[in-house]
Length: 194
Ligand SMILES: [Fe+2]
Ligand SMILES: [Fe+2]
Image (tube, rainbow, N blue to C red; front, top):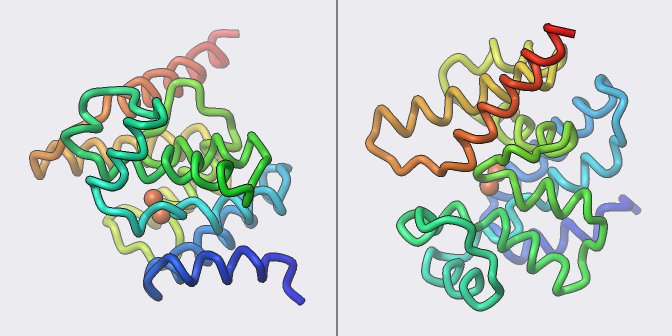
């Protein structure tokens, strides 16, 4: 039996066919990236598989869970509660005893907004969500190629792309995404100057 079978059954009960398929694609992509970048492929697969655990909840439900459990980090989450499916998903997975690994929970929690505190593992899951083969955003082939070479550059490209999209269609921009981008650029600059 597939060692992820139990997780897949849980997920299939919650998500639409399309979102379930996306989850499988993110899991595969995360595992591939992990192998290339010498990270734990099993953990990456599981984080990718479960990252959208709370995606079936609507904005009001997400906001209610977030408010009750002290998950809200910024007022923009009240205006655009959909971004809470990351942190609320991580909270529920822990609460329901489905995942206890803190590294996986953190990556799931940060996959919607990013953060200045993102680890390489968090970045890997964030990128996998963005570049999985079912995605059709423009410029993706370029980001896909970068992702297998340098996670930091790929993270910045993903954040640029997300922020540019929000700018072009009048969406709210979460400050954590801006801070994540600044932090990634700063890490690269620090490395280059050493
Ligand atoms: Fe998501
Ligand atoms: Fe996703």
